Image 1 (spheres, helix red, strand yellow):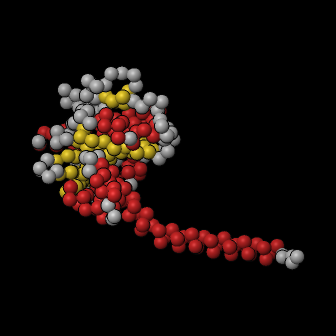
Image 2 (cartoon, rainbow, N blue to C red):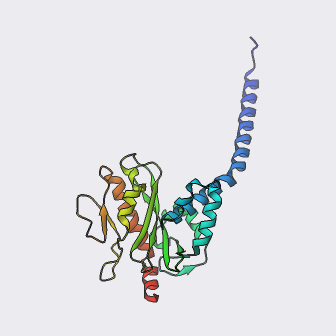
Image 3 (tube, rainbow, N blue to C red):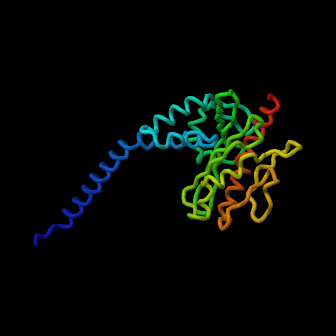
Length: 244
């Protein structure tokens, strides 16, 4: 058996590490455009899903093209506001793609994207992204509001790693449907959000939904996410409601 010097072994190891690093970097660079596209399609699909759109295309041959087409057709406006409710010169979709960066900031320093969905009859719905923390990682979603900017028209949630059968139930149709028709302002026009509560009658409560059985921490995280993130839209919503 041939013996190699320590210098030879060291140099060989260094060369192999450099070669592997270069190859991995090259592969990552080649895949990044595809990864960015997939992330963009996922966001657009979720935005459409919040108003019950996009699911019809799940069986189409070119799903990406279908989502792009539907998004272009129905999301005919988007903008970004700050905490005070003023419109700022930023791209709503770009901010949405980097929502984690915004969520890590204090509420008063965040930027808040708004997407405007226009139905065939001309009625508008306003879609906003939200992001928070669950039991095992981040949770996020999109909330669609009726033209009154108070009543929830639809909601869709997702998570990074909540427990299957428990906290992971936040992105099931049956749970998301609880939010339809709920309101974030009370009769006095004060922001109260929509609470996720356990063991209470919520059918007749316009500001609360049932928590997930066995998913208390995730439900609490969702509750905190809605109150924290939707509060950032309050000034803009109040101004917009006055205009309407």
